[in-house]
Image (cartoon, rainbow, N blue to C red; front, side, top):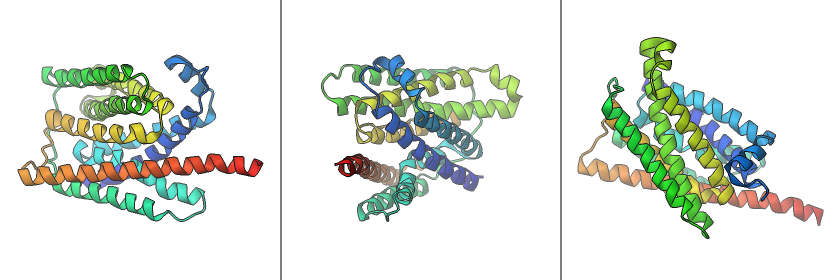
Length: 297
């Protein structure tokens, strides 16, 4: 089942990577007249490219749910958050070129960090979660952290990259929470059927957290380039989901001092690789924008 979870998580990561790139391309072109969250959303709803990104995001969500149903969060989520890696070969194929050495180096660093983390952490399978006070309290604490990070973003005035960083933190917290709530909802569906799941609170908390994450992402995309928000979003996403899996489902990773150091180093490799890949993505986007202008000249 863990092998199935890994395969589904890889498919989810690939789909999510394409969806993210498409949504960012649509959101960054929003005019100044699309002010505020509702104005931006109204503009995006009229953009076919953004709607395509949402369709792909829906497919990625279904794959994510299937992966979480088949395996522990601690295995699935690190793979999902490394999804930007899969944009590299796709972009190269579309552009009819070979990936650059820098891109290959970044992919290698990220893949190495992911592999080391999964092998080093080797979490236990976990147990059936309860929907009692402890779980509700954890969800509340995570939600408060998202609110505090959003408040920090609102206090930033003249530094778009810093503002986007904090919005990335908000998105990471919410999407990490989504992974935990999704697994809880699937557990209720498996144990009590559709009626039992709909009578419980996790599906509704999932909808709120998911909507908040998607809208926060659009705000981050509008404010600054991907490199300002995506590394923070991906790392915080993974860490939040790991805490949820450990606390609620009892998915215990190896936690001796040596393995903690190895796992932290592996997460650092993933963060560095993701940052390099996003820098490459932005460079290619700038080149694509310059080429039509050069042809017109």
